Image 1 (cartoon, helix red, strand yellow):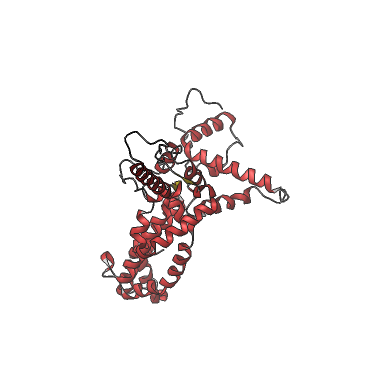
Image 2: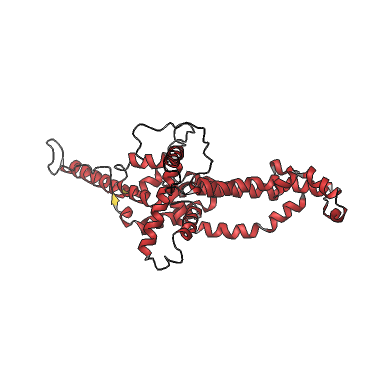
Length: 339
């Protein structure tokens, strides 16, 4: 609304000047400056909202969004960087709502599932948590460790990748009994030391360094999924946890959007549908809509062909196609299309 007003400020002012009865609605220059600054401040918050609701990042990347949001809020409140000249009233408004954000952050800190998914990203593991949380890092990692062991108990299984040294039971010739006992005792201590170093798959993952982050190589949206698919044999137990956690979305927007469409499925004559039937219908509609987004161009051409052939087809819903079909366009359908 503010952006639209600033874009149409000249028209708004002209309208008020031509209608004296609403002259009181004319904003002063100082108020317009404040609105301009407010639009400048709110834009990045809107961008974050759209990133969550439209891009739907995975749970593994959600922590980075929260950390960026925390830094943005701090800059606005303290008037840092590009917000140094921000109006004091706007900064005070954000400061007043900081307590609510802190309360949300406290709840987020107790959500071990988010940190566990973040740790499963081979580019992050525990490095970002240690860099961002500093004093609370070890506590947070321990909470995530307990979550892993609770949800996937097999991750606590101790295994050793280092074989124990073989201890000869026979004394070699030309070795005194005293020297031989000393060697045996030393080897026993080495075996005990290796046994103490034996650790679980989870602990080995937590103690290994994260792989180097490269924007050109491993920054794609499918990288984590493909990495776990490739390294599932190396980390069989953690791969199972990755299959459960990584598909989770960072927000409920997509699920809410999906079930909001149930009003098209459940009507006055279909109010007694069984839960399983509603579930199947909802999942089918979601799958069809996803395919529609991928093959939108092909669907437009097929729809035009169907309308030209049948004249008035009922195979297509008008809300599926977001652009009008020009009658003069020629069709470029694949030779193997099935109508």
